[in-house]
Image (cartoon, rainbow, N blue to C red; front, side):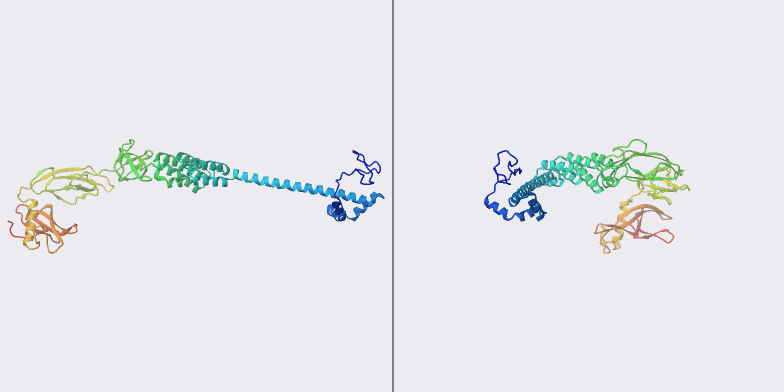
Length: 498
C-alpha cells in the first residue's frame, strides 16, 4: 500500500508512513473513470456534502498541508469527504428501509388489533355468520363485542335474538334479564328488554314468571304497560270504618279477570262468590275479604275491609190479608207507615227498590201467587220481608180463555176484525188480547180486564190504548173506559153472549 501523502511504499499493518509520518487512510481503490469524474466535480461535491464547505475550508486544508503536494493532498481529503458522504447515504437508505419496514409492521399490527379489539368488526362478523345460519359462531363474536363495548344493549339484544333462533330461549331471556339488572339502560332500551323477555315467557305460557319479573321491576311506567299480566289486590270503593248510611260497596281490579269474595272474613278462593255488582251493606257488621285472579290465572294477595253500618231498621209492612185459598175476587191491602216506602213482588223473589211500589190495594191474581212485601227507609235500609201466598180460583164457567174468545167474536161481528184470528183491514198484522187482572166495578160486579196488542208482520208486539172488560160470570164483553175522575165505565160490544 502506498502513502497517499508522499507515495512511499508502506509495510503491511502499519498505521503511519515511515517516511513522512502521515496517517494511513483506509480508502478503496477507484477505477480511473470514477477517479476522473470525482476530480472534475470535487469543488461541487464538497459544497453538497458539508453545506458550509466553502473556499475557506479548502484553503485552510491547503495551508495545513504546507508544501507537501497541495493538489494531491486536496484530492485525498476530498476522497475522504466523498467516502463519508457515501457512507452517510448508505446509512440513510438503511434507515429509510428500516422505517418503511416498521411502518408496514405497525400497519399490520394495527389492522390485526382492529380485527381483534374492534366491536364493529366483531358485530360485522357475527351478522355475516348469522346470515349463513351459523348462530353459534355468531354468538362467539358478539360475546367478544360485549366485552369490548361494556355490554352495550344493542349487542345484547342481537345476541339474545341469535340465542332465540338457536332454540336457547332461556339463555336469551337470561341475557336480557342480566342487562336489566345492570341498571345502565335508557327507558326505551329497558322497555324493549322487557318486551322481548315477556314475549318469550308468554309464548311458553310462563305467566307466573312474567308476574314475578314485573313485580321486581322498579319502573312504574313499564309495570303499567304490562299490567295485564299482573294481579293486583282488589280495591274497595269505601275504606274500612263506621257508617250511618247504607253502602253500595264496589270492588275493582287492575285488568281483566274475576274478583272472588267472602263476607264472613274467611279466605276467598276460586269457589267463592264472584263479584258482579256492588254489595248492598245495610245495618250490621261486615268483614269483606277479596282476591283477584286475572285471565292468565295469576292470583293477587287477599285484601280485607271491615264495615259497621249503624242504621235504624224500618217497620215491616202490615199485610191485612192472610195467605190461603180464595174463590171470589179479593183485594190485597197493606198498611203503610212513615218509616219508609213499601215495595212488593208477585213471583216469590225478594223485593227491592226496583220492584213494584205499593200505592193502593192490589187485585189478587187468578191461580197461585206468592207476594212479598218490604219497607225501605230513605237511607236504603230494608225491613224484614213479609210473605203471603194465595190460590185464587173463580167458581164460574167463564174462564180467561172464554173471555178472550168472546171479545174476538164480538169484534168480528162488528166488522172490526176480518176473521177470528184477529186480522183487520186497519193494520198490517193482527190483534191479540191478554188477561191483566180482575176488577170490581161498583154496582156492576167483577170483570176480567184484557189488554189489546198488535202483532206486526215484522214480529214486533205493540200495546194499544184500548182495554176490554168481560163479566166473570156471564162472559159479556165490553170496552173498558175511564172518565176524567178515573172512574171506570163500560161500553157493551153486544147484548148477549151465545
